[in-house]
Length: 400
Image 1 (cartoon, rainbow, N blue to C red):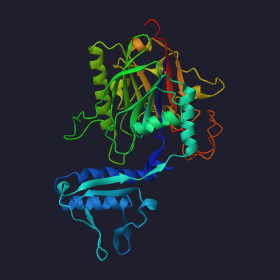
Image 2 (image 1 turned 180 degrees about the vertical axis):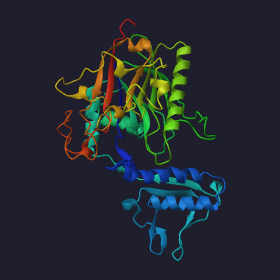
Image 3 (image 1 turned 135 degrees about the vertical axis):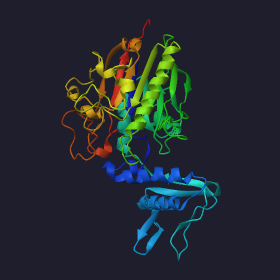
Image 4 (image 1 turned 90 degrees about the vertical axis):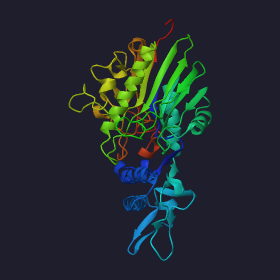
């Protein structure tokens, strides 16, 4: 059977602030989005809270800063990054003769939030995403940054011709529609799924640990074996809301703890896979800052990249072997996507590789990558299946 992981960068719709050619353009809006919704949850709004939320609304384009002061943005759908939703109660007053001001005294006075505006993913890009998944041909594939289960089901039905019998996704903690899901063919049964969405962050009281989730799937394979999968999308590398490394370190430590508990309970075949959002140290590829619990010298998990069988390519003429990473330029520091295996499962690997035919490279590039070939339909960054490559391994579990 073939096991794969692929960050698809959403299937049909993606937040505008996450889909800019230059990542730094949207980061202030994403930081303002997180800041507003965090402060909006306070039971009482201090003057500092009100000022911070108004500033966030300006950054998000809900309000515009004019020469005469702040005003509601009359073209929010065209120029803003987000919309302010007031479902019940009043949060913001915007009289014609005064600047907008916050009227709610605290969270109890209103029900609402700031919602990021989404735009359709490029149609060619969506078709290329489907083509990558078809060409990889995995029996089980982890999809990172899928919007929700209905989108995953629709994608499977309409673009994959129902290639997969099972499409499962549990909503996580990220409100931007970038969850982790699973597709399985009809030879695999999903026995159960266990979410870790509510695991608390040990360093921040009242906050949840995982940026998205770390769902645990128990699959029943055709030969009767049980395969346990831990799907991941760890904290991003963005510094928009502060240094992300400590949180990613805590997340990877908890993922390892979940793995250790599984093993102590007798689980033999376990895989930890997904987008870990951090590559090896640029100067020492054996070091994995923030991921030591999973990839460090003391970890029992085996990385697919360390297996002799890993590296087989669909097209031997491609130069994929020369690029060790999975994200954009695919340098070693851009090795973000992994399949980690328990020792018993690693012993069953017969092949594997990185599939880059849907990857344009850096979004700023005007020409196709020179070090690997892409589908001929991809003539610009917006047509790419993703800015990540897919990673896959083949497992011989016959008679296991």
